[in-house]
Length: 209
Image (cartoon, rainbow, N blue to C red):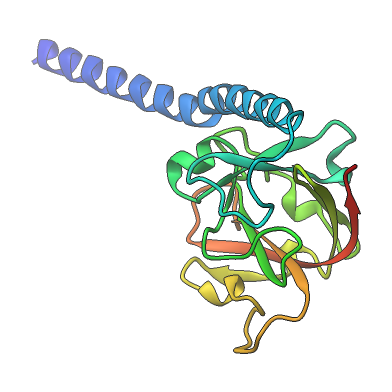
């Protein structure tokens, strides 16, 4: 009997260590890998932008590829992350994701993006610290777009199925007349079906020479 109990204890110990290892990888290991990918994507974009653009600024970005850079001044002068086209699990492991059905930066309508608060580099970990009036800056090869938040993401929580936040004019069935941005992330630091959402509007465009 003692041997059986001892064997069961060893099995449970190994299982527990396996779970801890998996949790550790999810919360720390994926961050290291994703941060490396994001740094590489930023450098790749900057090198790409050194050559004249061969496609129109309105061309659809390639799925899964970085195409613009995001800055949030409140997170620090050095905070910059790539935005990739798509919001699949693989896309969000490589950076902040752009909802493909939404508009591009500067276009009339809704430029909507999503990012993790935990795991995979946690680019939106401090998103709920943002407040009304904070700036969100999107840099493309041809221009820099500055948006101003209309409210804090901690003030609006929706179910993951609430796709109205991605509409060209969120919550209204009308044609867009201005450019807005929508930021989405998990409402909790742990797994949650809810999403925290913030909207902002375009306040400045600076064309690159």
